Image 1 (cartoon, rainbow, N blue to C red):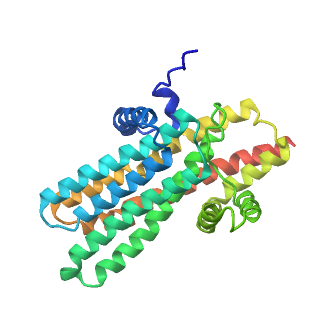
Image 2 (image 1 turned 120 degrees about the vertical axis):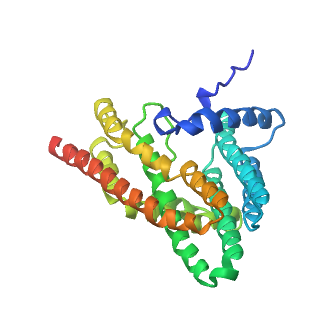
Length: 304
């Protein structure tokens, strides 16, 4: 029996959450890489590790003031992101999705930007002294919140996408129970990852309490059954416009800003961009999405 060909469309989470740059560039390239890695039996997690190597190497290139070194770093970072796209596409293509893979995927992005931040700080220390490290630390903290909440809202939206199994949204309480069932002797690696992933997930929930209340209200009303189709469609329509903000707070926009700052020879401006423009967008996104979730929670309770 001939194996069914997996198309590019099959490897996407949902068109609702895909950014146009990803759709015309990263996803087609990632799809080709995924086909290649599938053919040579490379696992999604191995692809993620390759992306970490490339992303960290990209960061090192930003230490140098020579623009050509920076351009090499830009190329490596774009290459790393094609692998970051490919690992998820390969997982969906082969059915090898796992929570460990999702956690590792998040670690990859952290490694890239830690390398980038450190390289820029080392580059600017002679002129800025300790102040550039302080600026980077504050920017890095908010960077982590911007990325975490964009990821959370995107996956919360995917709970309401009709295609089954599209969301990777976790629940901190369920993760805690899962962690308790693991043993250090047999599940050491997953146990270590859980030490970091549970607080990360809990932090996402704490920053978006209205979404947590909606999820709880749905569970109380519907139990373990599916979300009612009418409610699902209406929430999806209300939620979809916010997805453009989650995309801006993810990879493409911030990397374009980083590249512009590097070409201008003033990489510190990137930290200022994160602290001003992206934080304003974060606040607006949280406020807007919180109101949407609150409105639908009240509707559920009125219907009881």
